[in-house]
Length: 248
Image 1 (spheres, helix red, strand yellow):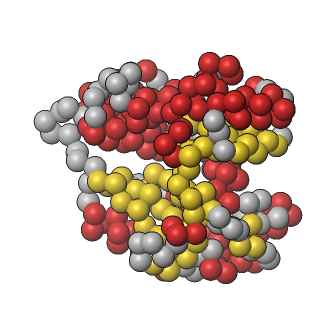
Image 2 (cartoon, one colour):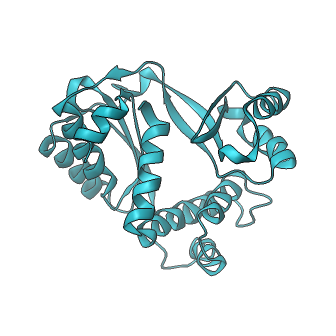
């Protein structure tokens, strides 16, 4: 069970099981508001906002919630969110990147730092982890949307860099600057993707096994539960057997 994409799948299933929709919608709303503030409040004129709205729709976020989040960007009393990236290490030296949107930098830094230290990790300096990751575009389609060959052919024709297909689905990787063009080309052929976003993709993976898996998952879940945290990326490699036994 490797890296970011598998962690995202774990959280996606966990979210369904726990029915943690309000927390998911809060994060999606925050991203929509920030995207609208940084550019035009029109998704057709603002690529980041278009992505944020598309991802919100893919999670069945109500239209009213989406419109409210966009309108919040122009409200006089609306919060000013700041984008911050934290980097740290978990068990076995696993590198972890935490992306946050916060209206209180000091609170956010304190929460992330204490979460690392209380759960077997430690926070590092900016750049201490991210040098081992690549900033790329990621487009995810469900497995039944196309065969492996069909997705590979379409991705290559649209200018993607790589495709990983499994029973969990198809993950298409692009250069960060090509994400919107590739996403549009695939959407024309396969309809809207399940998820389209920029991610931190690990260059190499660190194997974690035994009880260390439990410690790592405890840290990842604790970070995930922080209100300011939007996304988490890590470079761990864990077997399905160890995840089943120790992952909780």
